[in-house]
Structures are given as C-alpha cells and as structure tokens.
Length: 595
Image (tube, rainbow, N blue to C red; front, side, top):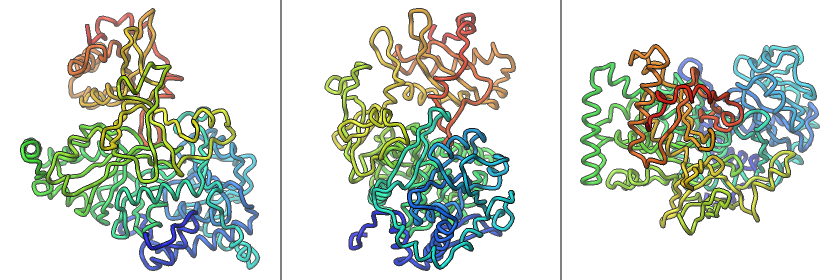
C-alpha cells in the first residue's frame, strides 16, 4: 500500500482491489456442498450492475438504503452497490422485533429496504415510507416472498444504458455519509451514528497497519455486519489489501469452517471465545484427556513464568490443527475481554489479542499488536492481558478528569479516555444535543475510564456513568468486579449495579446462574441456589478489597438481556429491570455474602 494512492472512499477502495487482485478470491460463503465464492473482479462487476439497477429504480444521491439481513456475499454487494450509486447504508439488526426494525429503517427516511426472506415475512405488510423492498439471500434470488419485493438478482437486470451512464457521476466524496449504524440499546435509546467514507477508510488503513494485515491473510466472519466492528473487519480491511474473508452465520459450524478454510486471523467477541475455550475443554473431557490437558497447561504456565518460553504450540498442536492450524492470532472486540480468558488461550499457545473501540470511532481506537517473538519467548502478553494495546496509527488518545465522579487524573492516574482522528464520527442522526455532548473541542468523549502506561498501552476500568460511588467516597468499577465473578462456572450472566436502599448504596449483583452447573449442584429450590450463589460470590469477593464486594444479590430466572455482540445490555437493565427490593430485604440473611 505504501507505493499506492490510498483510496478515500469505499467504492474507490473496491475499484482498486479489483484492479490489483482481479482473480483473487474476495469472499467465501458456506462450506462443502453449498459453497459460493466471488473474486474481487467479479464482485466489482456485480456491484456496478446492481448500482446501475438501483439508479434505474429511482435511487438518488444521498438516499438511504436500509439493509437488514444475515451476513452473505449479497449483503456485502448490496451495501457496496448503495455506496457506488451515491447512497448511504442504514444497517439494521435482523433479529430485532418488527416495530424495532421499522423504527430504525424509517428514522433516517430509508427509501429502499434490502432484507432477508425471514425479515420480509416478519414485517408482514411492509414499512410505511419504504418504496422498494429487495429480497436478499441465497434462497431468495428467484422467488421473493412478497409480490412487491424484487429479488436481489433482479436489481441488476433493471440496469439501463442511461443508468450506467449516470453511474460515474454518482461517485461519493470522502466526507459523504457512508452508513448509519445504531449503537446498542433499546429502540428508544439506540442512536444512529453517522459515519463517512473518510471515517471508515482512515480506520481501515490504521487497522491494517496495526495488525500487519496483508494479502497473505484470510479471516473468518461470524459476527453480524450491522455492527461497526465486523463491518470494518470484513468489508473494509480485505479490500484494502486483497485478503479473503470466509462468511459463516451458524456458530455450530465455526469449527468446520476453521478446519476447511484454515484462516490466519479469527475476529470475535469475548462470549464467542469463551465458548471456543469451553468446547476445547469439553472435547478433551469427552475423550478422557482433560486431566492431561490441564496438567500440561499448569506446566506450561510454570515454564512461561520461569523462562518466558511458551510451549503451547508444541504441546497443543492438535488443538491448533482443530482450529485450522494456520491462525496467526485471534482478535477480540465488542466488549471487555476477561484477562483470564486471554491467559487461557495463551496457555494453549494461541495469541488472543484485545481491541477496543466504539461505533462513533468507526470503530477501532486501540488494539494489541502481535509479535511472534514476544509471544513465544517472553511474558509480555501475560503481563498485558488486561490491556487493549496502544491507539492505532492516526488516532490520538488522552485522559481527562471526571469531576462529577470525583475522578482526577493527577490523583489516581485514571480518567475518561478521549479520542481524536479522522475516524471520529460526523454526529448522531437528528440528535444535535447528543452529538454536542459526545464531542469536546474536536475530541470524542468515549465515556470509558482508563489508564495509559508509559508504553502507551491503554487499560480500561469501566464506564464513567456506571461507576458506583459509595458514601465513603470509594469507587467500585462494575467491570472489574464482574470479571472476577465470571471466574465461577456457576455465574453465567452477571450485571453489577449500584442501588440506593434506604440511606446506603448497595453493590448489587444481578445473576443468572448457569443452569447445568446449578442442576449438577442439586440446587432445585431457590433458597438453596441463592446460598450456593452467595457462597461463590463471597469466595471470589474475598480476593478483592472489602468495599468492592457484593452486598446484595438478585437472581434472574432467565438470561440477562444482551446486545447482538453478546454483551450484557447494562443500560437496558438499569432503565427497565424490575428489581424486587422488598424481596432482597426479606432475604437479607441468605443473600448477604459479606456478612
């Protein structure tokens, strides 16, 4: 890329990839027996004809096209065609309820809707204001589920000589709106983040440099692309370097795809990597070698501590082979990664790096860098397991005080992390006040608290608005406490909150116990289960300062609400969860682990 002009818009990046890597595979969808592949040149032709078709159907420069479907080559082509035709994509999660989908589609006045058959059927009579519905998906190419829906393949057939002639004049400018991506939250709380072509391309170039991502790489995509992290990873990064992405929507097939395609990088979220690790242990247990695996993990950790040498790749080569055998590293984003999860992967010889960002930053702000020599011959990654690495190139970070929480950088070294760079968003859709609150003299206020060490590595400590300030003035970071409590297999979902009961702030844990673990412990009735949960929280809490310990427990009989990236939706819980304070007080003796 050093000797090439850097593209500043997404269509320009696609055109460059098609010129540089015409016959190289861009995307692979599905597996053996149902595989669909497309090269960069083929993708460019498909996108050009589809864009001309959109123009023929009436799409104007600046129009919004909502995309609400599972990942696939047609999803990617639909977005790229929208951008090439001068429009902007509105990215909507396909698993939302119909009123939520309708609200997010109509809020930015989307004229067209590209959706999967399942979404179209779920919406029934359509959405007011949407003029065109286009059915996407492999099975919907020729038989859209509604008579007024056009198949995706049919869009290109609408192209005319006139619409093709108009296409070059539709090329977007770097600062044109490229996409509206919604933040996580309930429909009323989710904000539409406006991101430009410059935002995405700046962040894409930064990530390629930080990760040394190149044409030699291939990666696996399992996260829904309506989120900024999988969008930048799977759509922007590969076209900048000519890499290949494998698309899989079914988590049950992840292992098959890893073995079949042997990617070099695996992008995921903490919940996904926790599942991968549990599956490794479960398979070892089923094969009668769990004790041996864990014994070698202990030996490996000891050797690592004494010498810095990682014996994992040698000892656990069969596990590496089961994951494809070609992984350079794995990257976790979208939520905080428990440092213990990272260390578990390290002990198997698998580098699990952590990144950090937010939709408003397009989205990557920082990511740990990978060095094979440091991983194999030092304790660098073990010592930095709780960090998110330094800022990516082109992004500035600094800390500021948070007076309302009495957090002073000069006193504790902790502050709110603010960010500046070409990756910072344009604003929230029709929410000028919220945009003003998020920006400070050209800097983006992330709302995340953290520290920065001498090497520029960022260590996040939690969200400033969720810090629990006790009457003593001491502060409890929910994320820190939740990470500690997740060390217990019994505590499946955890959300730590500060609740005022009487004149005292209680550090409260809302817990959904693991059903299998609870059943294995023969805890069929709630009082017994509560005592078991209380005992676990008490045991783990003793490893923390007394003021950080949980003082109240509330059990949930169902999983806690989560975002599409499987992060506990703390804001939703804060706003709407029905807490039973009287029940807590009545059960005080059995639910007080610090007592």
